[in-house]
Amino acid sequence: MNNFSQTISDIWVMINRNLIKYRRVPQLLVFSTIQPVMFLLLFTYVFGGAIKTGVDYISFLLPGILVQTVLFGSMQTGVGLAEDLSKGMIDRFRSLPMARSAVLAGRTITDVIRNIFVVILMTVVGLVIGFRIDHGIFNYLGAVALISLFGFAFTWISATIGLAVKNIETAQVAGFIWVFPLAFASSIFVPVESMSNGLQIFAKHTPITYTVDTVRALILGTPVGNNAWFSLIWILGILVVFMPLAVSRYRKIT
Amino acid sequence: MANHPLISYVEEARNRGMSNKQILDALSVAGWHTHDVSSIFLDHIEASLIPSPLEEGSSENIITVRNVSKIYGKTVVALDDVSLDVKRGSVTALLGPNGAGKTTIIRILTTLLKPDSGNVRVAGFNPNIEKDAQSLRSIIGLAGQYAAVDESLTGRENLEMVARLYHLSVPASRQRATELLMQFNLEDAGDRVLKTYSGGMRRRLDLAASLVIKPEILFLDEPTTGLDPRSRFELWHVIRELVKDGTTVLLTTQYLEEADQLAHNVMVIDHGHIIAQGTADELKNQVGGDVLELNITDADMLDSASQLITHLGSEAPRQNTDTNIITMPVQGGASVLIEVVRILDSANIKISDIILRRPSLDDVFMALTGHSAL
Image (cartoon, chains in turn brown, purple):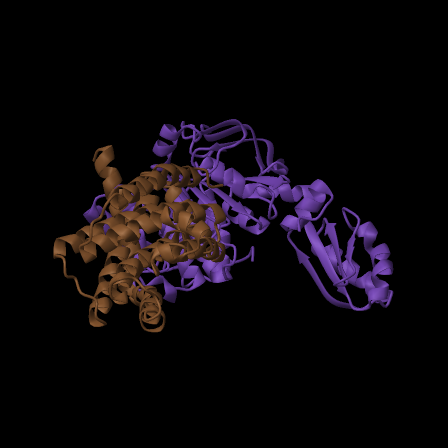
């Protein structure tokens, strides 16, 4: 085997290893959908009537919730790595002649696969409570592709955090503490225009709002505008910064 | 124990010029199996059957470490100018208390950690250069301080995963996993998820994973810490088998007894320095024979008891006022024990316990450094 196919094989082995966990303990997947489902139901039935969006609130909310699900889900990457670190698995992997990139790539790709699965599950729940895909399956699939890419970028931030804190509980807290306000200060739940002026300026330019607005436009069939470009630029920017950061963290583990 | 028929049999066979392997074969033909012989006896015999690296006529160093230092953060000195050699085919034990620097040495030699200064060669490779490090990783095995096995996988899946990461083919990985499960007595548990494994089983699986390729050098970081005596014995047995096949083993331990059982060469580490080196016997001789330990019933009598027996020791007795125990290195074994009992009895000092034991790491440390290992 040459180097390239060895690397692919190593990554595949790691993905397989991570996926076995979900296959064996499907509750892990179910639980990671309970929280976003709760958000979906609470916001739709509690706040939905009070929030003015111009369309059905469920139609407005669901694209946002899909992005939020992936955003929160991505934070599991760091927790998984911190767990591997604290249990000595990373030491074992680093002492093997496997590709240096395979542990991180395997973990982030697994989390993308899981994200796609959960997004589809959430869509089904949405369809049950009145959400409709009216503007073509291709628009929807395009939206899912963008969400996955967005999630992939955030898994690398999470990986960097997980490798830095090295402790499962800390990784959990450090993953959510900044994501939570970021999720609320965006167009996930309410139109950004309804926020106070200062916050609006911030909220309009986060990767989350750009991604949510793109996904929403694709699914609702409204013009996408420049949002898709800004979203992709953010995603690319995050990957360019955090992939090397995470990899160098991984190499320098002591 | 020295009078046990097996031991005299082995000594006799040796004198007749039989090789170690021939002796073991003869024992097994005669019906002696692991199960028949109590673990202690087998231990005793096998310990004397470790092939000596000098016997094999090899004096090549497979590991050389020169003037290596490592500081964590800015202030924690883990290794301070350490140099050491390990001969091909030998078993070397790094002996020392927690935090002495044992694990740091293992991590540097297994490419996990870069030293701040100094030179390292392992099997001709420099672990600090990535290209060399990758070649080195394909010929070494490492079993770290905790059993690094995946809880959610079965034993077999764990071994197959490691085999695939050593770049064995899928069928070869499968076959190797089956072999190892058998070798480590895990074939029944092989298809169970690790959550159901005992600590000893996890350790065995971890060791099996470090042997997926037959490594040239096996690194074991405190392989038996936290194991019950039976599992510990089983592990020692496996390690000895490996050494017979020519694997070089570098292990760390906190137990002098373990170093004694397994290693040809013992290096004692304290505060990032190697403070002594030699065979376990040589180290024990520094302590001076055996150690007498007596538990005085009445705490007020500790001082007078120490004074009464001090002339019998090779060093001054030490007192532990928390446990009422007096420890004293002695030469002359049983006769000293009888003499001590006689003296204390006539002085009317009551003893609740008295033993004569072989020196422990703590005794060696006391003799070498003047401070306790703990």
